Length: 433
Image (cartoon, rainbow, N blue to C red; front, side, top):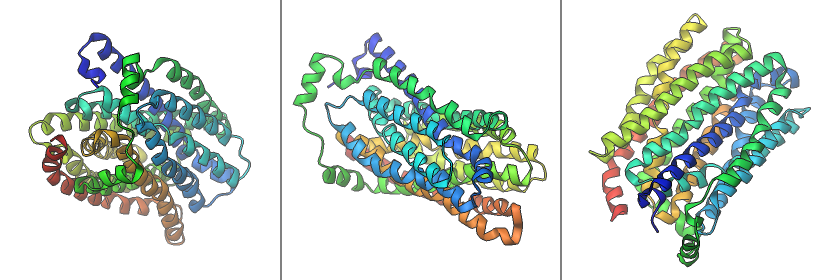
């Protein structure tokens, strides 16, 4: 069955563009609702009397555990030829948006933890079907750019979540902030339901072809296809290490500026949100562009920029956390925000090319499973436990020393991206054949 992009018609190309823009908007809402808790963590901790370990559980593991566990079965459902992927995304969006609003009603740590679990349940239904949908609608040579465009939702959503959440916390309170950012997602879910089309179900002929197509691969076979790739396994290591550091540093850098530089949530949300959002967006776009341009000459270079970028970010990050003033620290952090964001498009593009067509959603879900369980689940929690352990020696400045170590650990994902790149040419040729 021809994809929308392959059909060559103006209508099909326009439909692909509309789909990409709407999916980008959905992913922006995804990360607003996911990341707003980071900027609200300090006022929540003061109000509910939480320690740093509980902050790590609330911002990471509670969300990530259910997000990752549910990602695989949802991806299996998305891989079925008859599944309407946009409607699956719409239902997921309505669930996580409603649960974000409910976070504002929590009266204690356990209620907030349950609401965050609900957000994770909803968000599990977003990226696997979205990646599968995008991969069907664009040709392989444009896939890295398309997935990087979708991944712009990460820095944009993080930026908006920090700025909006911080300002709302300053002027209204953290409870009201959750409600205000959560409810608009329910409206967007209606737009997704009624506007987006699935190319597998766009007309009668497509529906008949989908029903006549081979059934979705059995789970064991799909996972065997995915895990049988050496390059994919190295990509899992690289992506999970990168996510571990990214989620951990994002959560605790916002707290670092409040504790070590005495900024308010609104001030941190505005300034660090701008640095992180603009730098992250630049890095995400640039990573996709470089992957498509240089990967066309030699496909191992799809992952060269992430490996080099994560290495270059280390000295700049250390200098930023050591800076005597918060404006200088923010300026120095801009480079690491760009360099550490280069991997989004190349990573997911490579994953989609290393598996058969009917295992694409599973490939995205497996990568998300490991990234989020290790990264989002354990990154903030590990840094929080480490901060509690260092607090008797360094007091409120314990977070600064945790972030020094996190910067140096950037060598780990850089190494795995480089190792993975050495296998790309052979494995992509094999899959293409």
